[in-house]
Image (tube, rainbow, N blue to C red; front, side, top):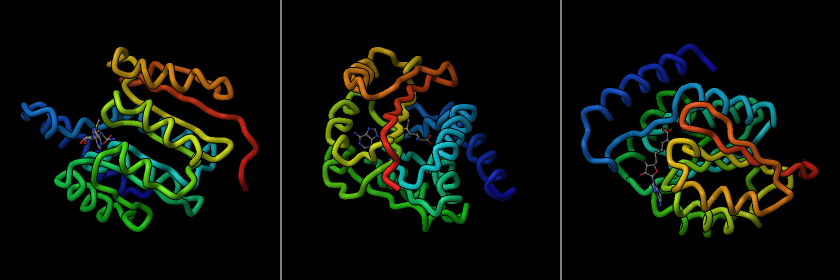
Length: 198
Ligand SMILES: C[S@@+](CC[C@H](N)C(=O)[O-])C[C@H]1O[C@@H](n2cnc3c(N)ncnc32)[C@H](O)[C@@H]1O
């Protein structure tokens, strides 16, 4: 990651903290990933040499920058979904400043509908939108996942009741190895140790 991208991430962290403290409408908050969770997500993606990543919940692109910077080394791509056109406009500007916009496709709309329309195969998925639609999204994504898929979901410790449906759905598929990591707001990790497609 270049010093310019690191500096942008630092600025976005400060902006997110200050903005969210002042903003009362939940839908307008940035709700960015905690730094240590972002670092761990990036580590997982790079250790696993992930090249195709789906994110559900872009916000202003803070986490998307981490994802795009992670796949860059493997010439990969990111598809990121959010229902908010305003947040996607911010994400586009931030990704452009990071020099990573050409690695990312931003899809604006409802997560579950957009997931159903995707035609790509994904080696990793990061769930960070409304937690209640994640089980349905997971089911729709199953045929679109690489054999050795990696699934990451934030907020398992901060919102356990809301994430419970997703965790139960994924853990009901015994082919996935799973763990809950006590980092940030809690990161659920699921990995299907299938033969890599490449
Ligand atoms: C926690 S924030 C994402 C934060 C972002 N990943 C980051 O770390 O910078 C959740 C985002 O998901 C979006 N969202 C929530 N439910 C959604 C849904 N059902 N479909 C599409 N977007 C959704 C919200 O607009 C919000 O921007």
